Image (cartoon, rainbow over the protein chains, first blue to last red):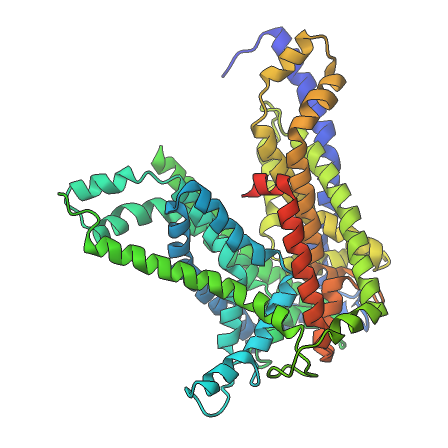
Length: 294
Length: 265
């Protein structure tokens, strides 16, 4: 325990009071508009669907239907596609982050700007553009036919391939930036040391560079996986109806008639639990790592 | 050992550079397509049919789209101001290292950042329905403030971290009181951070589709919501032109905003 003089204690007390005053508006805002809404989601999940929103009659029907095959399939589909997206973004994001981190400082800034600018264009518009690119009369098919690779246009749009491609496109920067920020602080002398000790480049990459950049890969994976799990617009625009993501089903149940808000709530709550599990795992991992680094 | 860089290393560097170049191209494909197609004289998405400006004219004549644009601007402006204000107060409050609730607040700030948009959208839609709050402009603004505020806090906090506290003693020694110190010394120094936070909030608000989709009611469209419904209806011809203008606008903002460039990059 630290000991403070009376004067310091008075000062600390005054500062704590002003801290509470300054942070209270945010606390109230986030409680009303962020925390309480999840309680309402839980509450709505045990009610009966009404024509427009909800009837205040108790029922567990929504939970029964949430665990039926079709919704569980959709949940699994979202999970697998998000996992694939995460893996692909790691595989191609890592070399990109590596190149940026190893470039001279001035060039690093240019590269980062190059990565971020497309990010600043409205993302629906960017997805729409992929739709143009992939459609049967689109640029890619025309090019492939023109150069004689294929005779008939390929069906690219409304496939899982298209969804995966666009997901990787949309979420890639979220993987590159955290890995970059770790590699940027990386001490390259460690590599020299490992090579002096007789390891070749491949061995030192797997024994030195990769373990030390795990933190960035992990942060990036969370930033990619979680939003990917809840995505609605990407599968909606370029995916096939038969393989809907859970985000699409939730949106249909909230927005399109016949509405089923209790079911949407139950599904949202399941998704929330999944997200919480992933975050807690990530948090524990982070804690155990920062302890072992000490 | 004088043969560095070895063949293997050169191979890896070459491979990395190829991946890097391809990825940069990959990131820019959609943007180039939109710009090129905005001048394409074809009714549907098809091959090149000749150069035209007509979609830009049609765009100008589209009243619904103009309304959506102004709605987006209003929502983004109001939610930027409120979320940056809230963010500034919170970040200032959390500067105090003796504050016991520090950890609790860091957790609360972190949650909205990692929550999937769809869950924020669904939950806030249910809140508004529960409260019988009319869905429209104000519900959208409230939702936008909610998802922007964590970002503004974090950006302003990172600016405050670099603040030299001995300046306070210096200012006090020179006879400044607390409010003079804040407005004449501290505020100007952290202003770039506040502007960066505001700009980020503005772009997040302009970009959002899903949370707006859930928190809006009949008749109130923001630009992304309008674009999505236009794509759904299949009236896509003007969207390329609109996108091109928006891309140009983004580039313009990116290059004129020095504080953002200094701060984020």
